[in-house]
Image 1 (cartoon, rainbow, N blue to C red):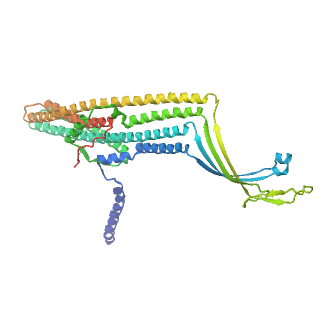
Image 2: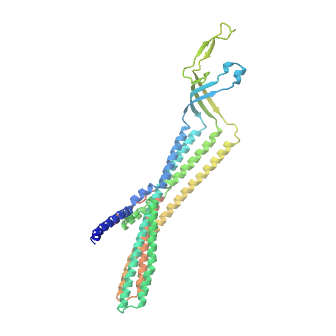
Image 3: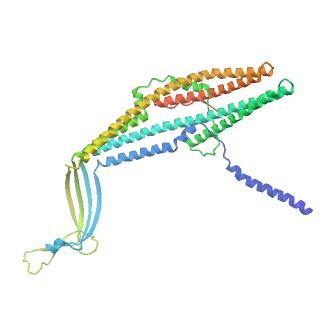
Length: 479
């Protein structure tokens, strides 16, 4: 018995320590809720794959400009060679003086292009236009990603508001069930009223579940755009207020009408025009194949002809040797010492393709056709931008009208529901009146939330279509 009393506290303490040890990692694994304002979400989205891909394309286009400029500059190369001749036909036919079995060479070559028919110049122009187009694409991508992030953020906020509306709607239905049960107990209501209230409450549960599912999907999309983990809990702290939405809508409505200069300044339109100019340069590049090319090559180096396999390490010279027997007394015989002898040359090269199977002419035709296609595509992009701007302005006007009408409708729906509930509580109204008023209130609140969402996004779409910065919300911080 004393043993049992002694071991029980010990085992209990050990179990307590073990429970703490096991629960600590589980608590550490739980993620803390991240407060995510809209500005932070926009910054996170700009570091995503879409902007990174556009940035790398700009880097590639910049490298292409450097490669094109290299064709207009002189080039300097150094090289060395070694060759060994096992049999020399000239030495066999003429004399042993031509028999140099080992040849070492080291030289530097300077090549200067004097005229290339405009190929190099137009190549630089084409690469520069493509780089500018890539930079415009980067700007357009940044704007598109910002708008996509704004839409995802506001969609998540709207989904959260709809969840709150559904929660309130279910709470009102539950209160009406309790009220109907009280009326039945007091003899003022019937069993039918209780069943009707319960059925109406049960019918609202799927709507609340669907609203919560839509909110989870909206938050998942926001996490994807902002490159956050899928299981990261989020708390959206930027809340749009009515004054901020009105200010944004007023600024967008007062924007000037779209003109050609504003459309030409859009990043997407500018990129299409720059690509069309690059296609024009490709026509001149193809035409340069019909013109001659002129270049100058200067080669300066040394060569050595050692008789054995030893690497030459000295300067070349001619050493006097004894002449063969029977030679004239005045003859001077020499032999090179296998060292390095200077070797320099200057060459001017002119090349003019007179006939190439009509390849150059067909290349010119193809380049011209591609240039016309690029021009038409640029014009199409310009027309699409003009249509998008006009459509965005029309959508803004419609969204503003719906927003103004929804404000008054929501206020009247709240008052109607309050009066219907009061009449039912005093026995002057029916449960059907309360149900109809509650449904109207739910519809009005939902429409009001969607109207605010649509109005702000319509303002952002108009700003994007006009090439202006996206409106920053006059927002409050969520409590």
